[in-house]
Amino acid sequence: MSGVRQQLIEAGVRLMERDGLPALSARSLATEAGTSTMAVYTHFSGMTGVVEAIAREAFARFTRALTEIPRTDDPVADFIVMGVRYREFALAHPERYQMMFGTSAKSLNRHHTDVTTTGNTSDSAEFAVSFEALLDVVSRMVDAGRIRDDGVPVLAGRLWSLTHGAVLLEIAGFFGHEDHGLTQILAPLVFDTLVGMGAEREQIDHSLEKALRTLSGAP
Image 1 (cartoon, one colour):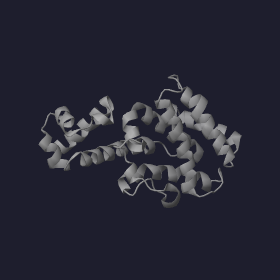
Image 2 (cartoon, rainbow, N blue to C red):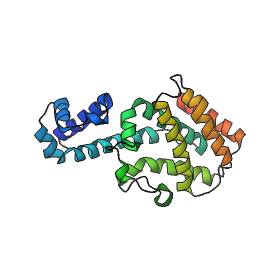
Image 3 (cartoon, rainbow, N blue to C red):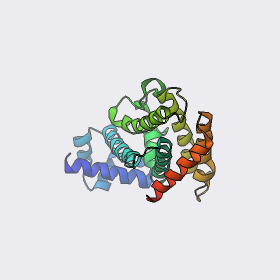
């Protein structure tokens, strides 16, 4: 990747995070990157290409947040850790998150596919990688007998829907700023749902203890 191209992508990410999706334009991007609007068209053929490139970078960083965690012999604990990392990323980068999964005209809705039938979030492989991490941990929970098998893509879609909805409401400020969105809303909601999927409450409590140790860095 050329230096100017990467420079424009990084500038686009900064601009989006600071000023929001509507601020992305060829002129604002060129100004932020310290280059010319011609460079935008030379390297991306226009703003559509810029948005695509920023999205790929956003998904790459999002995927790292979900996958660069220790894999243990407890898939429910690993799922809990992944959920916490998911929420942390979304709250730390709300504009980036809403660009990936929101309803803005500049979001990636045009790439979405039916996860219940395809097992992918997108018809573009680059945008589907993060969902594969969720599919993997859900599959492991099913194989371990922790939850019933309603079909891995369907189960993943249900659990993602819970997390996504709670996170969007927290981003909007409905749950305050003292982690109530996690401790009083998202965690109890997910745990109750896992019980409804066949998990044992006592086993979930043990998995939560393991997850908390992982998150704290304790052995």
